[in-house]
Image (cartoon, rainbow, N blue to C red; front, top):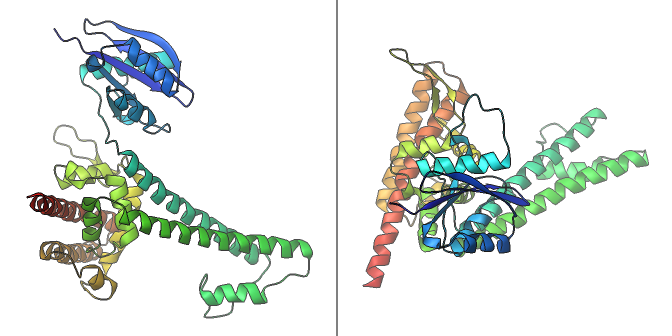
Length: 378
C-alpha cells in the first residue's frame, strides 16, 4: 500500500493554509502557518519522512519562492494551474482551509495540471524582460499625457514633423512655452517624464543585452536561431525564451499554440461544431510579441538588411525554416485578405502559425547545441 502523503497548500503573501490527504483516504486540515522559510522547514520536519511527501499549490502573485524552498528541503512539489482546478457548480463556500483540502484531495486523485516552473536564473531574466515591457507602457502613457495636454491648449507641431521624432522633441523643447507659470511647470514635468521613460528603456535594454551574454549556450543558440524569422529581432527572441523556457518541452507545435491562447474556443456537441473567438487563456506576454511579429508577414518574402545580418552565422536548416515561414505566412495572409477577413483576425491566424515555425527552429537549435556539447565532451 502506498504511503505517499499529499499536501495541499493555499499560499498567500503572509500565510499558508495546509491540508493533508492521507493514503487511507482521510483529508484533514492541519492549520495555517506563516509564509516564511523557517515555518516551511518546521512543517516538513513535522511531516517526515521527506521522500513520502508530495506538495502542491496554485500559481499566483507569490511566484515560485515556496516551490524553491520546498525543493531545497527535498520535497517533491508542483505548482498548479489555478484555472484548471476542478470546481463544483453548487459550491458557494470558499475559505483557505477548504481550498487547501480541495488541492490535497484533487492532487491525490491526479486531477490537477502542473505548470512549468523556471529556475531562479530564468525567472530573473523574465523579470528583467517584463520590466522593460512595463517601461514601454509607462512611456506610452507619459507621451499620451503630454500630447493630450498640448491638444487641450491648441498647440500643434509643424507640418511634416512626425510625433516623437528628434525634430518633434527639438520643437517641443525650444518652441513650446506658456506665459502662465503653472502651465510652464506642467509642461516641464510632462517632458521630464517622457525623457525619463526613454532613458529607463535604454538602460533596461542594455541590461538585457548583458544578461544574454551570461545565458547558457543552449538558450543563446535558440535566441540567435529565432532571429532568423522575419519580425523577430533580439528583444522579441529574448521575450519568447523568457516566457517559454525550453521549447522542446512542448511535444508538438499545437501544444505551443494552445499555451499561447491563440486558438479558437469551441463548444461542439453531436454533429454540431461551434468555434468562437480566441481563448486567450495562455501567456499574454507571449501572445503579444507573437502577434506583433506576425504583422511583418503582410509583405512579400525578402531577406535583406538587418534580417540578412541576423541570419549570417546560422545553420542552413534554420535559414530554410525561416524562408519557408516567409512564403507560407505571406501566402496565408494574402488568401485570408482576399476572402475579406478582418486584418486583426488575419494577424491572429498568422501569429498562431508563426508559433509552429518558432517551435521548429527552437527544437532544431536545442538539438544542434546538445550535439555540439556532446562532441566537445568526447
